[in-house]
Image 1 (cartoon, rainbow, N blue to C red):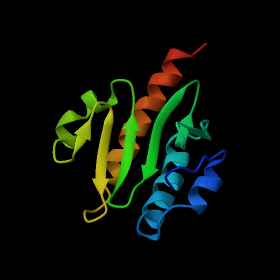
Image 2: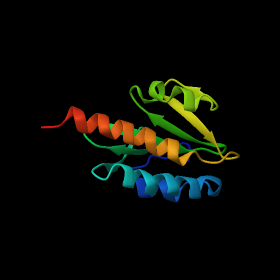
Image 3: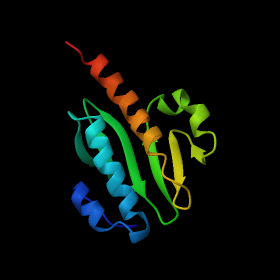
Length: 121
């Protein structure tokens, strides 16, 4: 997937390595349910969920799923993320461990609620 430029989430999913495809499909479906008003977009050449701004990004790699929930979501869930490799605003969910879908959903819901509150009229 390196070097490819994606314009749609569907295009991205066509190129996902088999090792990550099922996990990525699970994330995609579950996130749609958590944030029903959000739309799928490509941002920084990876799938993202957007509602009045990006909620989360996620990406498939050979050995892990990268998950990026900004701006303060990782801080809020720091204790639960402690067992995973992290960077500034990113976390890696390795393919050789169960996917923490409930945590991913809660992180996404947290961001979604932030956006709903920020843009409430």
